[in-house]
Image 1 (cartoon, helix red, strand yellow):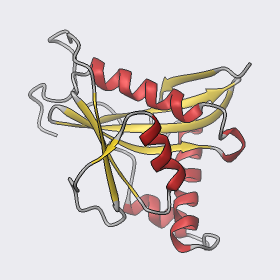
Image 2 (image 1 turned 45 degrees about the horizontal axis):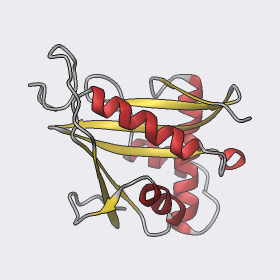
Image 3 (image 1 turned 180 degrees about the vertical axis):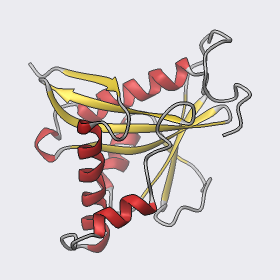
Image 4 (image 1 turned 90 degrees about the vertical axis):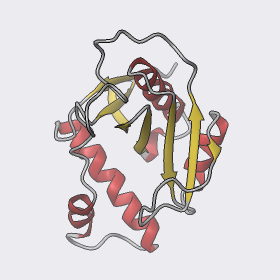
Length: 176
């Protein structure tokens, strides 16, 4: 039986940094339809860093499958909602429930922080990701940003839950 666990990590932690680099390498390859060139992934990581996936602006989850680092997902806090980003499962672990495990974990964190919805943008070539989001209750919505690679926008409303007033998260009076 496959066992998935998730934990909070800083983007520069060893497993997280490797997963984020693999994520970006795949994004570069798929966008250009060719292998990444020397330095191209580092340039993409510098252009679109993940350093805001730390408190108080966000979080990063690493997923482990049977003890091995197998994927990641991040949230950025917005007023009253959370933005999902950097969802990645290593190829050898795909189709084993990792995407569902990561979505459940980020949704739980978003609820606990007081978010009433999760939004994300994705690209047309990421058909597997779009199918994953649709299977888990995310619906396409009109554009909510103008990201250079954003071609599809999704949202999932989260069930309301009581959140202790001292919890940090969206809409808690901090400027983001």
